Length: 138
Image (cartoon, rainbow, N blue to C red; front, side, top):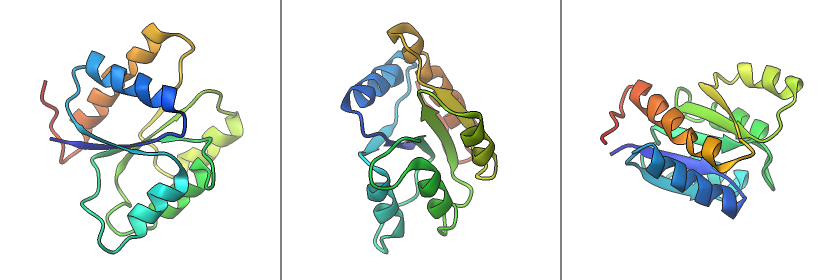
């Protein structure tokens, strides 16, 4: 079963993301990090577990912002080529330009309504299907 890291500080968005996974029939081990520093600490820990198949990263995070998290984890052994999707409610054109250098697989705009938010599950399914080590089972 694939592993997905969700880096999101908003509990309501975490709940919506879980609903979207269910709606998209995505079976995965979901690990939630509440801020960027938690993910960075995990990635840098010598005794960490295996790398995930996919990281979904919010850009607006406390402690360490999403862009800085990307810069750090892309330099860590085993994380250079991890599939990463960025999820944000209102990206600026400047932020999107910065993301290109981090080889982001997908930019997911947080939709304003529930129906569209639930469609994120389909995007996650597609990303996992494309990830080399993570076939998705329905």
